[in-house]
Length: 241
Image (cartoon, rainbow, N blue to C red; front, top):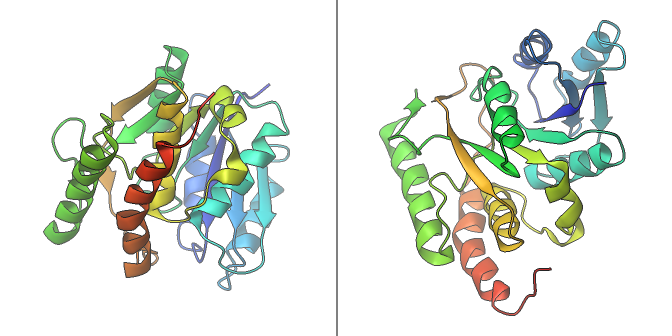
C-alpha cells in the first residue's frame, strides 16, 4: 500500500500538469497524487481525468469552483488525505520549480525522525535558478524577516515544497489556519514548531517555471508581510497543546 500522497494545487497548468504527474509516477519510491484544481478554464482538470485512466487508483482529482487560493487548496487536500491511510503528505507545485526527485529526500528526512521536512532554497546559500535578482532578494529577506519577528530558525519560511508526517496534520487545527498565499506557508511552519514538532530543512535547487504563468501578486506579498506580525502577536495569547 502506498503511504505517501503528493498534493498538487492547480490553476491553469495545462502546459505542466501531465509532465509533472508522469514524472512523479516514474520515481523509484511509489507516490499517489491528488490534484486540487480551482476550476481552471484552460482544461487542466480534463488532462488529469484522462490520465486517471492510466493511473487507476493512484491519481485523484478534487475540483473546486473558482480560484479560492493556495492555502485553502492545501487544506482541502490535507483533509482528503487524513480521511485515508497516508502516513506522509506533501505540498508540491505543478510547474517543476520543485524537482519531483526531491520527494524521496523529503520522505527520507521524515523516516529519519523529522515530523515536517522542508525543501529549502536557502539552507546552503541561495539555490534558485532563473529568478530575477529582485525576486531572489525579496524571497530571501522575507525569510529573514520571518526569523526576526517569529524567532524561529527556519531559513526558507515561505517554501512551498514540504513533507508532513500524518501526526502534524492531525494535531494542527486546520480550520484555524487562515492565510492563503505565502503567509499560509509561514503559518503552517510556525504552528508546527509551536506544537513542538521537529521541523528540518532539506537543501534543494529551486528552478523557476519555464511554462505557464506565475500566481505571485502584490496582495499575496502584503498578506505575508502583515500576517507574520499578526501570527506572532496572537501566539502570545494561544495555548498549543
